[in-house]
Image (cartoon, rainbow, N blue to C red):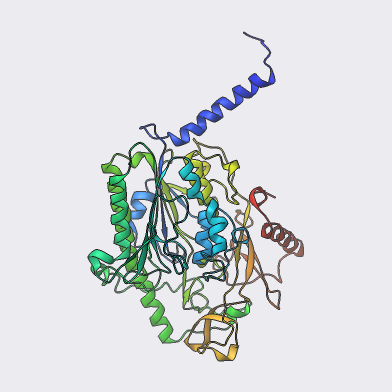
Length: 508
């Protein structure tokens, strides 16, 4: 009746009804009306800043052009094991406590397995009746002590023991050891992952949705291409623009060490690595094509979200560092991110910053999981790519943190620098050290695209970059910035370094 007064309960019901319907719609967004399926493809060491996506024409057409491309996607830590741990948990490294790729650094340790792994996002997908499948590289130390360990939440498990390989590796197949040799048709890991994922899709139960996480070794070293791609990109060299072979002036001491300009031997080495990385990616491109074709043939393509990303970026010659990741600069912390799926309009290019800790809450959001019941530092980016399904806001700033690795004894390649270094090349170029330990706060606004970083070393070194005027981070402007700005960034950093859950998402 007109003018009728409603009590609080009735008012709440009127408000909640459309919200509940909206939640249902996310899971039933496709024409079929069932819960949406999800596939996450996680490459290993694939940059986006230096052309790492150029070889992947099929992937860009079948995922990027068919959905959303995030041009400001970042890892919260530029190293495999801590980054993958952030993907699985949706948490910053200071909360999941995986510091580096070693067992002592908590990579796939007993403490990890008993703690963060037990509440990683696949556990929650299982509660939503998802059929789950994993194949490829999991965590760098996985299976070294116990091949029989299968993390909770996975129905089918085909995980690489240890770090990336293309041939001559061991898998844990549902907890049982499976050794592989060097026969291309039977053993090439990227293709094996593809083939087993296709078999899983054939054998799945159509009564329940599915989630696949595929983690190929490419383009991680040893950069072994499939035979048919070994001669591709013969004339390609690493790009020579931006910060390539620039002296690390006014940077952390580790960046001031490399020989500059680089010797010819280093240039040849990194050019070869760059080509081989591209060659290995062509098999990943084939993987994406095969998956999309399979989804189409089983009539699930329109009801499946497909994510493509990498655990961290990479560099080849930037600031005279030959090859690696682990640094705070754009080439190491930016990653590719493309998503297609229900409710995502094609050919979107999205500017909002998205982090790899946002993958878990986004996947769980799609699955219908109540995110308030999950302990994550990230936030769902479903509202950004499918605003008709969700309302949301972009974060104004975020944290990047890294704990350096080193050896207790001097490296034979670099005895003059003493102990505490790692990842050393000839000519005394070391890519990492114990005190290459830093935390950065980054704003990504049109007027204030700033990065502020503090090192945990004897110098308490600080680096500050204005990426609007200096996109290649050539000039550390810490001595030129208004002290009030430095203080504000320092306070933001302090808060983020101790944040947990909701406090990591506060926009102040």
